[in-house]
Amino acid sequence: GRMAASVTTVDVLPLYGRQLKAVVPVLIGYSRGADGIVVRTPIRSVNDLKGKTLATAQFNEADFILRFLASQVGLQVNLLENPASPRDPEKVNIVSCADSFGAGDFFLRDVLSNRARVDGCVTWDPKTSEVVEKSKGKARLLMSNRNLLIVADILLVNKGFADAHPDQVAGFVAGLLEGNQGVRANPKAYEELLAKAFGWEKEEVL
Image (tube, rainbow, N blue to C red):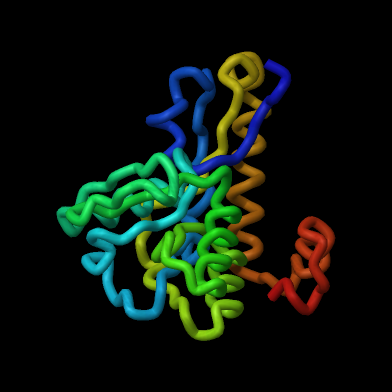
């Protein structure tokens, strides 16, 4: 009850929504291009993931994207107990890692050491770019969600706080929308503020 608000992705709601006791007053935006699947170079399509093994973390947007794409091409997923477990040749096999960046690191180590425990990973930038760049041409970005608007960033507000302070929640939402619109309309005017907020150099912002 001490946390007033946080930000997450909408796929969290069906998993944890009831126990969170939170309200969602606004959709902030879509994770365009942040999330992606990196695979060994010979893999050219989602259909090619049949019988392959990918590393990812469970119960987050990376896991959700993989399961969504597999379902779109008629493939089921199979969660392996560990990388040495037998693969299901008819499904997309998943090795669960502690977090999504760890999944990227695990795949990259596998590629660079010429092992064949995993065929790809599902994570997000900057890890997707890092894995591709460091793979020495052995890995490629299979897809990203740049044009796949299924991962949405949302504001979560503690329900008790929202009920007690509806004016503050409304004000926060209004400020968020106004700020987004301001940056979209005139990004140069907010260059210094964004640089300070994110710890970026000013030339990185635009």
